[in-house]
Image (spheres, rainbow, N blue to C red):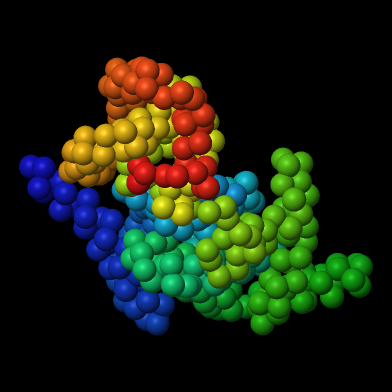
Length: 372
């Protein structure tokens, strides 16, 4: 039963998006007898939106101003879109989806001005998607196949939108719209321009400007900046349009206490500062410094005993660190290590003249480091 569930989930996540994309490409070039057009469109948008959101959350992207933690299950790139720009991004996508629905539902007999505004909404969303494609199209996406799946629904949106616009233009062309007569000459001119479907594409482009102005005015009231749609891509790192540099990466995969000080809840493990280990930055807490100072002392006083301790740690420490991949596991490890920490501390105070100095100088870069 579990295997069947895995097969179904795997099909939905990996195979279905590719199948729907192929069908949408075929339907775009077919004028008659399209492949289950309505069903395919519903599946494309419902599953496309859900899977894209889940995949983006699953990646656990961090903004450019946060250091990445390397090792274990951690990611190796920052977010392609700044998290503080998400309200603008979501607003553009909502406008694009609503506009597509208005154009796509052929049964609705809407005024031409509504169709033109909907085409403008689709155009705005498409321009944003093109920027997203440019942002994502680099070596990071090529190295991480699952990241490429973030591009599938945006691609399908463009395919479906082009087909919907072609169909709606064909429908209104067959209706042979006639302009209304007004007493005002200006209104008569506007009516003639709008009723001519050959003008709709140009009008849709022109109408993007007031649409953007209205959208910006609303978003500014919610704390977004006027150029947020552009800064959503610029205020990132590791991607094509990125204009920011991120802090150095932090590693934790060589020492389970390094993992604890990084991954545990701050109120419990109490990280003190950043330190240097093997030339890389790590997060340091007191427990880690005490343990490192203890090994520093025994290497200095009893090299043979230190060799035994080193051998035991190399054999068991690194494998343990791989399993400390959640805050709860890190907290449990921290608590279990407390008795050993007290023993290490007692030893330091008994056999070292300045134990606190030795503890304080661990992982500061220039100090002698032996617990690597």
